[in-house]
Amino acid sequence: MARRRQIYEGKAKILYEGPEPGTLIQYFKDDATAFNAQKRGTINGKGVLNNRISEHVFTLLGNIGVPTHFIRRLNMREQLVRQVEIVPIEVIVRNVAAGTLSKRLGIEEGTQLPRTLIEYCYKDDALGDPLVAEEHIACFNWCSQDELHDIQDMAIRINDFMSGMFAAVGIRLVDFKLEFGRLYEGDFSRIILADEISPDGCRLWDMTTNEKLDKDRFRRDLGGEVEAYQEVARRLGLLPEGGDNAVLDLESHRKKKG
Image (cartoon, rainbow, N blue to C red):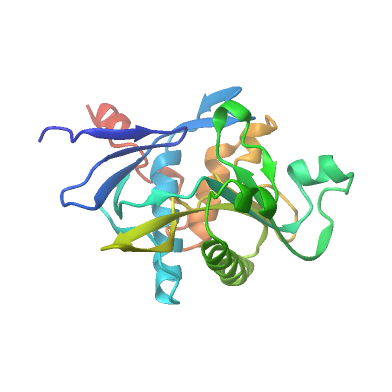
């Protein structure tokens, strides 16, 4: 079957035209980047794991009434999603001080924040996705006030749900990023959750040991990236116990089998 037309390629995913109008196929790559793509590498099988984890989280969020672009998973690396107009704002939800927040404000990493903090970055790789305020969003009309309220409400609801979901399997949800899009229905549009939710965009720490189970293992040269992603999938019930031998890449699996 011929490969469908490519619409967009990002750091971790490729979007292809979907089988029906208003749909896209989202392909998860093994490519890993950090520090605005200044550091590049590969985490073998990451795309397969992120596809499964994101499918799981988006399905559960849909079940509690959070509107998302996710339709269904197609295979190991692809899922069918609704085509949306991405709002050019990256939403960062923080429960614990870590990463750039600790550096900017001199707060020790691991400090529990007194309340959930929502930050916004303008999505522009050339500018390094700069931090912006609500006033910037309004001034440059990146989204309307009503849309921003919808984004904020959904971000808090998603955080409440995911914090409980991960805590139930012994994982602390430190922070995570979200992207939203406009889904057009006739002359009207509504805001829905888009992109993905996976260890690529979440800081996930073991609640007992504070071991990092996310892309910080790649950012900070800690090693064990594949094992960390597998551990998250395993705790969520997406990999069997002792699932290190699970097939994560069909091509390499075929080569091993000859």
